[in-house]
Amino acid sequence: MTHACSLALSKALSFGALFTQQPNFHLNRLPKCCFMPVRMESNCNMGVNNNDSRGALIVLEGLDRCGKTSQSSRLFPYLEGLGHSVELWRFPDRSTSVGKMISAYLSNQSQLDDHTIHLLFSANRWEKRSMMETKLKAGTTLIVDRYSYSGVAFSSAKGIDVEWCKAPEIGLLAPDLVLYLDIPPEKAAERGGYGSERYEHLDFQRKVAQYYQILRDSSWKIIDACQSIEEVEKQLREIVLDHVITCHKGKPLSLLWSS
Image (cartoon, rainbow, N blue to C red; front, side, top):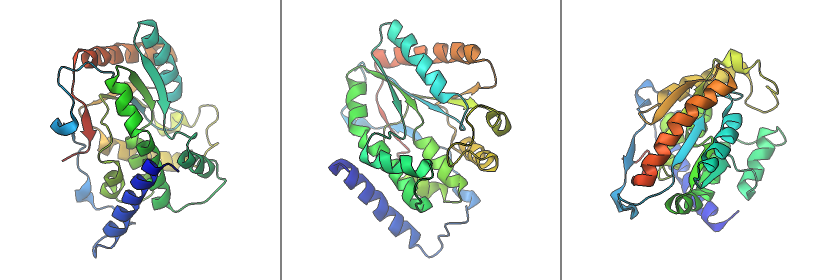
């Protein structure tokens, strides 16, 4: 594990220990009053000039088998063909030391406490945080398959408090655009390969869908993923290109869930 990752994971673990010591905190009960809308606010202390041209941070989210990976792969050559610098990212990044632990867990080769795996997912994103900012400032647009929203939605669906789940993600870069590929869990379950990984169970995916709704904010665009691949691709192209152009003209970076 890298030094940066170790610091991030240590910070997250310390937070978890402190939070769970609170006298009224119950891990298996979600207080309804904690369901707050996501806030994404610009941070003037990041050293980013409002006129700076940069790449866009585009995130695709949704239930398992909703088509995120396929559509991400289609957006990449489209933007590249228009002359934009673009890279395709995916979380978890299974190539890192933390990512390999996550991969073993997802493929049912290891067992971990729900809080532990959540913090590992968060640490996996922190491993790439610095590189992400560098790439964006250099003008490269990042198409990201899953991000912090997945981490919070999936862990909350297990019964972990939403605010606890969001806390280790605070300070990561906020997406310029979140494309949520909306599909009924029953429809997703009909797609090929469903059930090959730990979380691909219909009842659980229904819970995940509910928590995604809690996390929605003004940066989200909802796309009907039940449409044909070609129709979904067409809609995504139009939305994404508009945000890429806006960021190239100059838009400050923001931090995720900052108060």
